[in-house]
Structures are given as C-alpha cells and as structure tokens.
Amino acid sequence: MTDAPSRNGLVAGSSNGAVASAREQAAQSRRRFSPERRRRTRRRRLRGLSRLALLVLVLVVAVWVGTRVANATSNPAAFSEHTYAVRNGDTLWSVANRAYAGNHDTRRLVFLIERRNHLAGADIRPGEKLILPIVAQ
Image 1 (cartoon, rainbow, N blue to C red):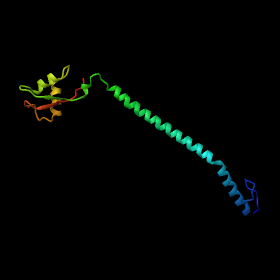
Image 2 (cartoon, one colour):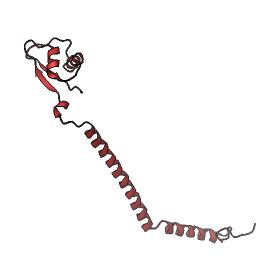
Image 3 (cartoon, rainbow, N blue to C red):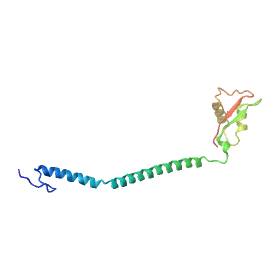
Image 4 (tube, rainbow, N blue to C red):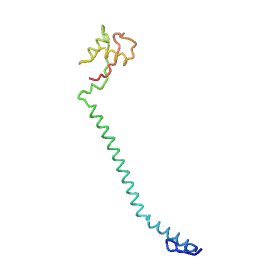
C-alpha cells in the first residue's frame, strides 16, 4: 500500500499527519464557535423566547378582556344572587313572580329556586330565607 495524500493533503499512513489533522480540526472548531458568536447566538435565542413569552401574554390578556367585554352589563345586580325572606301567605310561585320581572317561565323559576335552596318540595315557611338564583334573560 502506498502513502497517498488524503483530501486534506496529508499522508494517511503517517502518524504526523493524524496529529496535524486533529490539531487542524480542533482549531477549526474553535474558530467556528468563537465566544462572540456563542454570545450572539444566546442573545438571539433569548430574544426569540422573550418575544414568544410576550405573544403568549398578549393572547392571554386579549382572551381575558374579550370574555369580560362579552359578559359586560349595565346592571351589576344581574350577576349576583339575592336573598328573600318568606312572608305569611307566600308560595314559591308568588315569590318567583314577584322577584323576577320580565318574560320568564314561572315553572322554570320555581324549579331553579327549589334546586338552589335544596328544597325537597314547594313547602316554605314564613321567616325562611330563600336564595334567589341568577336567571339569564
């Protein structure tokens, strides 16, 4: 076998060529990844990650604001429950008619009041406190 030059111009069979080739590769890798280049790459990655974090934050805030605006109303009492003290002669039907003005199904209102107050039936007593649930228009 002859000692023919390899691609890098060194003789493959000689031991000096292998050492010189290793040194040359090490020098090239040091030149390829200089400290300045590593710093630039790190800065670029951090800049990209910070932009991504900012985008996610903006999206979360936009969704939150969108839900707040979608549920906005000029009547804050529409989103809070009320209590009602039962008077003499009251029934769930009369309480539902009196407490909820508007175009509502009274049967549904009675059912909602029963369910919200954990009542087994329509029996209520004077002095009892009922929680009147929120009803969508």
